[in-house]
Length: 154
Image (cartoon, rainbow, N blue to C red; front, side, top):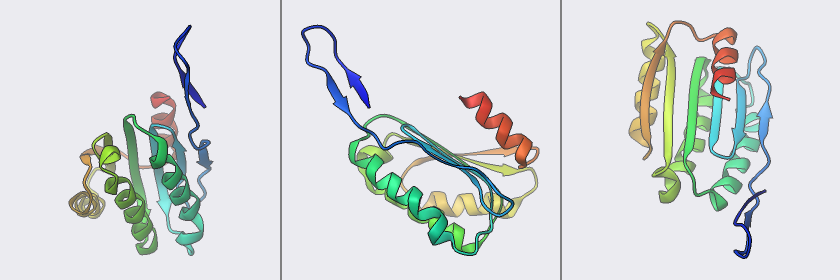
């Protein structure tokens, strides 16, 4: 719960969805969803991506009902299968459908140096949604990068 206001001014309180965090595995990405931040990085080669991504989708549905601030979205994949791409698109599309959310969302797409397929996937997603989008080429998409990245950004 976030509350604003002091003294004689009545406090304004809003309840946001609780933080959703999913630890990475050899087949699934690291996911952290919290007010103002969406982080999904790693491998997404899940047999049943609907089962994996549905909690994130439900979190986003609750989040966009009440959120009015900026949203930083960090995405990066070593590998992502077709079913996971579909769910990633569904998540991003839902965010971009809310005009007040889309205006305040900033997506950064990380991809490994020389991985033109991943760069192209980011370009395709960018063309399908209505959010600010930038590309960042990194030396390596691996666990060390994700750990360092997430630690430095917190």
